[in-house]
Picture 1 (cartoon, protein in one colour):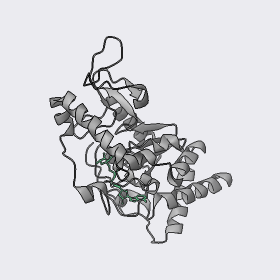
Picture 2 (cartoon, helix red, strand yellow):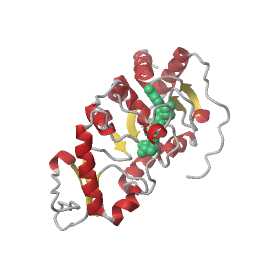
Picture 3 (cartoon, rainbow, N blue to C red):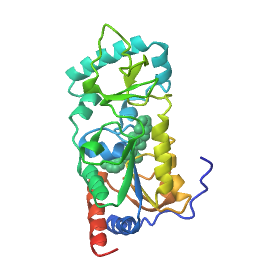
Length: 282
Ligand code: APR
């Protein structure tokens, strides 16, 4: 995507959160095709740490190697052995990130976004999260651009299965594809650093971003491409951006309004504001 150009003026951030939420509700209620991008911040109130920022997983433990996919391809059987060992260790460690995600439940932010889909306001949701919480909250039109940690995927044919339906035989690693005639290596559906994002997911996000007449960005630091570029595809065509984040991000300058608050607090109020305006015939 080329240079989006610089924003004319920053968001109407009056520092009055209630007024910002009301303004955001007005913008969403007026739109016909709202697309959403979420990041780790939307799951914070579900007990899942973010990656960056205060208390983030990588802020505390340092970033993982950026060539994870390359390392996987070099020794897929060895990678799988380590992964199975790590899973056993995580299951035994109540403080592990994996346990936090496994025990997480959708929070009011996920529920509000599912309600906005039910109201016909949100038409598609792109998430960078792999925690499955949007789907469990009832969201239906979703693209999980970084995959889903509860699914497995064949690297050759792209076939996907729920991990619970794909037993891994530790005596035959790496696991191979179950599709007739395909012997591809199977890995977690979660996209690794250095791994191409599945083409189907990318083209869906591109198409939805170009249809959007309003883009709601929730709980992402907006530093990872291509995800952070999708809101700008809409902005370049004149669609207003609405942001929900306790902190400013590289997208804040493009936003009509940026609600400085936690998703679990702001989104239920935003959904109520939209519902009220829609009921009043906005
Ligand atoms: N509500 C909303 N947003 C919040 C909250 C909250 N309660 N708490 C923190 N945030 C915001 C932070 O201010 C930050 O902008 O959530 C964002 C989290 O940023 P990251 O940790 O960078 O997560 P994310 O943007 O999803 O990262 C994108 O990077 O490493 C890759 O694959 C990983 O999908 C991830 C991608």
